[in-house]
Image 1 (cartoon, rainbow, N blue to C red):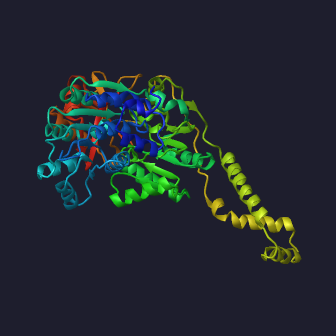
Image 2 (spheres, helix red, strand yellow; image 1 turned 45 degrees about the vertical axis):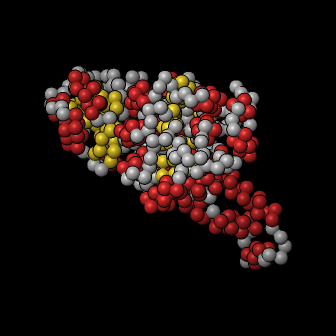
Image 3 (cartoon, rainbow, N blue to C red; image 1 turned 90 degrees about the vertical axis):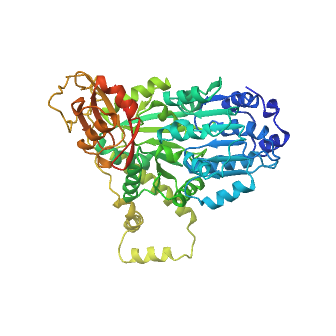
Length: 550
């Protein structure tokens, strides 16, 4: 690895900024990507957030920038407003000692302000795909002089349905441009995009295990689906956590979980895409500054967070993709600090845990749900700490000792007076219930993925197969990330698949609508057609993703 940034022979003004920011040693992605980008070659980079990839592409862009009359020379496409603002801020910090104009463009901000900035002249534009295309169509964002395009967090843009927007933006740039694509995962649509629009890219991969797993203690708690909230509440009480990030799979689930935790006395805030921009920025500021220490977020919303001292990551919902799991737990255990990742796992989800362990090459250790006795003991210990601190601060003449003597003179023992005072001091805490948790039924070998639910739709022609995954003969099992919480009904599933994929209704088998996802069987001869045409679609007002699970 390079000993210092001087090895890259960057512009002296950039080296001064790097020194001001107290960067000492390049990260693996910086060490490998910066030299390639400085040569003008394309880069296909696989790296998580928190690996230093922003500097890996920003420093070469700034180094190669021609300030005088060059127009927009650098274009960085980000999936969210938060990331667009964060990356634009990073460009300004790296370019603080040279004249550079950076503009962040995203929805929710006035067009007029962005148009005026573009008319005055901008060197680098960082923004979301939708707003970029709007400005291009209005004729105010000219990309004819762009020298470097960066597609950042490309897998997230894919999952949000931006793949066509990315292609449309690339078509507006010169064929001679340099292209860099960074993504935590590299699914086939992203690889195809790279093949179509990149010239012999240098592939750079930072091992997810190296980035996140080595410094993170990984645990899971086996608990019935209906007891996850009670288990989470107990964990939050007993874990010695300084800052906790809880992941929920959906926007609806995020808001609901935060409300449920708040009702149980947990000081928590939610972060998801349906919130107004001002509210999201306020929540992120609270979490970043320590005013809020527990945050419930979706994967996409959390992409705008880059905080070093998150002590715990909790997977309330298990991610479908093992790489998404690695990306989540990468939020903790940074900068050499130990972190803790806890996954709440229902028996039917054990197969996903095995996939995660196989992917990370690391075991995930099972821990027990904290017992009621442990929670009470922890509450007692915390209260004793507060009492000891108060006893050391008691001063004579504050009137408290007079009140104690008055009560003793009335015939109460000093111990009884102290006990009554403690009861009053702990009144709010003692009112918080410790909800009961049913013993979990251990999953049987080979049955982890079934979940024990009766299908909500079963065409007469489909025969259930015993054992294995419970899949009917001649059928392929698919899943979509919408369920009961989103109002999904069997007829919605049948109508969407039959209509959008253009297959007969009899080609659709059993449908199992669960809390936040839906399992559906499709005749094997139609499976690829369905997956190709329904990679991203809308159902009951929500975007959904359809994927194969066996």
